[in-house]
Length: 130
Image (cartoon, rainbow, N blue to C red; front, side):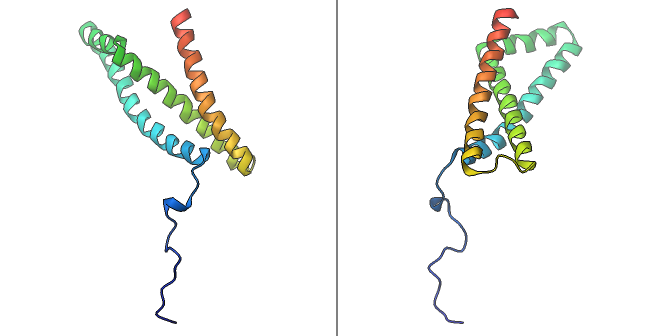
């Protein structure tokens, strides 16, 4: 062996990758998974408040009825739907289908578009019919 060091990097570095929609969806899938933990804690707070009596429930309802609370609920809805669509995308990949570069990119784009569209439609339905 020679003492000459190789010019190759020892491990891949972020600068050699071209950012792709599938990479973005992977990152967002992890972020939404973490956000679901926080949102579920808020759901537990609401349920405990409902079981604790009118005063506790009024406090929780006031929070979730505020602009901040509504934004958090909208974000929680999107995180839940995005994580679900991402999970379905991974389920399809686990069957050995849709793993070509173009198809996986199309599915990644469909995940973000579908989750946003489903969130908006769900909230419009709640506002109109709820």
